[in-house]
Image (cartoon, rainbow, N blue to C red; front, side, top):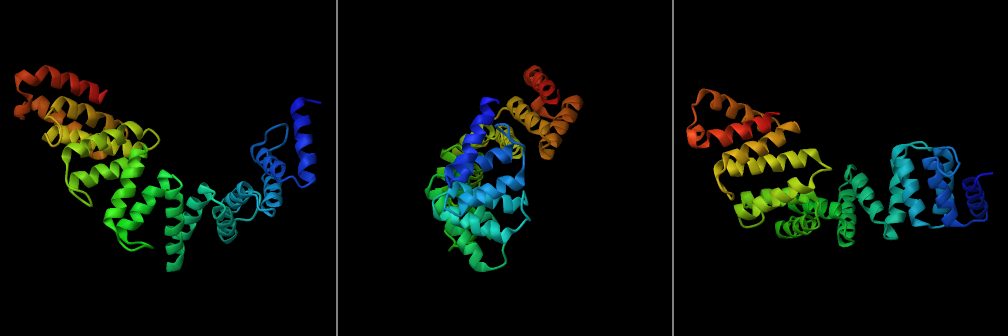
Length: 280
């Protein structure tokens, strides 16, 4: 008998005796198919339920996930909401965010009010995702009184913590003078942060890269630099950004025809180098 199966047997014995930690661990192992146990969502849900019934918040959140996705149980969003709420009430931040997500789908306005309340709880516990989404609700007056100042505050905090969507939103707000004083230089800094930290979100990264390209192209908030504009637009185009692709193609057409004074001899070498780097 392998050491791993011995561990599984020990955990199983403890779980059978009512140990909620062991019950939750066993549920996770069945969910993942680890420690010599087969992957079995039905068994995972059964053990999560035993721990959840004892008030174990991690198991309550896990059981909610099972109901949310129909894994090992019949999909039931009502049950998912019930178990997410139990876990959220004990401070589980993942549960607060998931609960808010499901409540926002409801047709009852009171559900949206409750969703905003849970997002605020998640934000106050340090979740950048909750901060950003609470800011969107505050900006739109969805489930809460409209408050642009408070929205800007939460977006700034989330951006400071490296949340790329918030960094991009803050940059746009600074560029447009929406909710905050217009400041193109600060906008450029936050677009750059969004581009650097957006590796998990290709759309945000591409949008930020193209915004920076336009700022270099127009000389707004950044030095006018067509080579850098083309390089950044090329990076965005590589990720499927259509406006960036058209920008690169337009530059290529003007470069070949010599119709744009920006392609004068003094800039020809660097522009050509940047062009070929962008279209590789």
